[in-house]
Image (cartoon, rainbow, N blue to C red; front, top):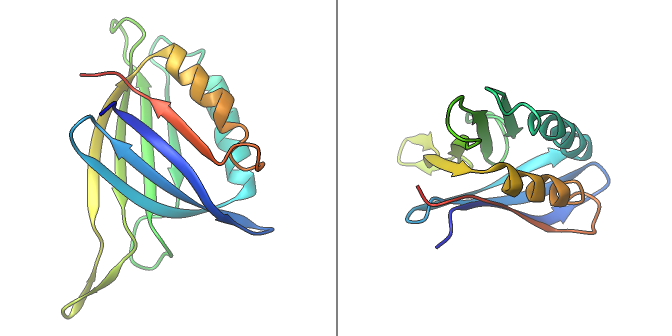
Length: 148
């Protein structure tokens, strides 16, 4: 299985979309559903356009949802980092949390930390496709990564 982060739009209305995010490191995978306002997609796209040119130590984050039981659905955070002296590789640290649910006498959520590596050309492909995920032209976008 190819390491990747997949974004699938599964529902939308006038204010927001629900996205299924599936991460896969080649062996392990984890998925969450998140809600995001339409403006969040444009904001993330703009951040990624700036980040792609910061190959000497640039850092950015992709955030959807909020962590904690007081928030609806799940949460997703991906920290992208061009580490200096790593031949243009992008090191990606992903934290994910599912929706909270009753578990005995408490509420819990499943959580995962996933570590991926990608490259500038793959980031460019992702940025190009991500621009349209919230505009109904593209309901599935994949950020491809490389084997570790």
